[in-house]
Length: 227
Image 1: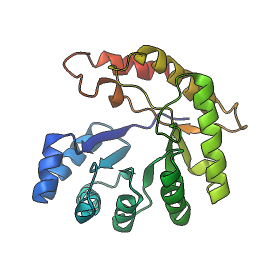
Image 2: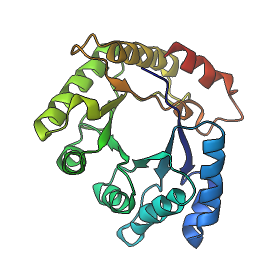
Image 3: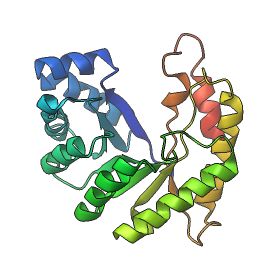
Image 4: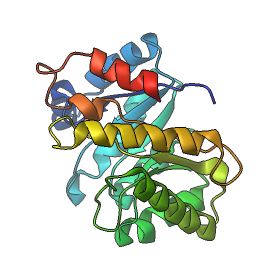
């Protein structure tokens, strides 16, 4: 499968994005989206962070702002089905929903949303407590369980994207976990698990989140070269 680059710069932890959302100013978001496209992004991830009900409209605001300056496909990134629904309503073309896990609430709310709108859906390989499995075998078990839920809800394999969740380098077992993620991606994308290659996603920015001055960019480049 070809490598597809998703830019995750449009997230609430990026100060210009946070300021734009507070001021409802689309221009910083649009400038950032343009720069992501010019840098070679294939997808743009939109993540407004945790939103109380009175601010659920921020997802729609971000979607509308970005769509005005780029035709790139969007990833709507939120753990809240209500926020994702606001983004879906504002989207000009089907986005990717990010993300569902084995948590009961997400299976109950996000999975049916993806099925109803026939959108692609990212599955984070996290258990019912939102924890990642420490080893390869556990990650594969989570992938199989999530796939079963998706098929039962009416989604097809072509709609599913599996993210084994790269660790942050502050985790005590970060390097070992990275190796387990690499093995998981290779097995899923190799098509050995259910006869067809599965689409996978790896959040490289997870590795150095909050650690940009501690670890160099080549850490992410090295991880990418292994996937």
